[in-house]
Image 1 (cartoon, rainbow, N blue to C red):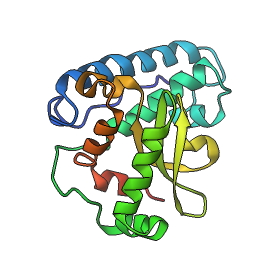
Image 2: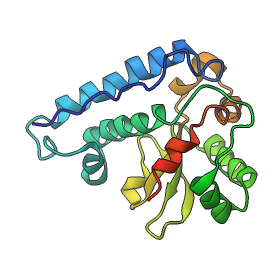
Image 3: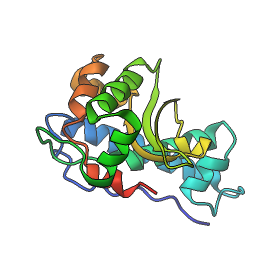
Image 4: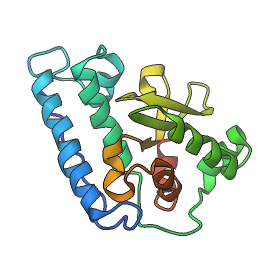
Length: 195
């Protein structure tokens, strides 16, 4: 049986402050994500998913506990690996900038559309920038543990809008959290996910 592993955090827990606090990282990564990984490993034991990759489980599992925990495990692995220490004027360059400009007209237009998607998602879930099968970038809103892989798209950048992602730092101010996140996006990581 293949065990789904906890992804490594590629920076110190305080590295994203003040955008995301060390306290939030300790709870969100250390407790929430660890729980999804542990639960998923328990759920897939002795099932058809026991030897599958996390991506295959997310693509193929029916709605329910296995999919929910697999989706959240993959979503959070992508989420935590896409950040770096805050930087003013943090903008994409290279291929990802060209793809964003082609799809949305400009980075500012993309930011506005993506931020609106993240802010307007009712309840818990994720806003995603993904690449469709034709190579075009699209923005989607996914409830709960949703991931673009379920629709044949490649996830590039995901923003967690479950309250556990921001409540300790922003309370109920989701819009403030969304506005701050742009300072910590590691666009080289996002670009590396392009097909």
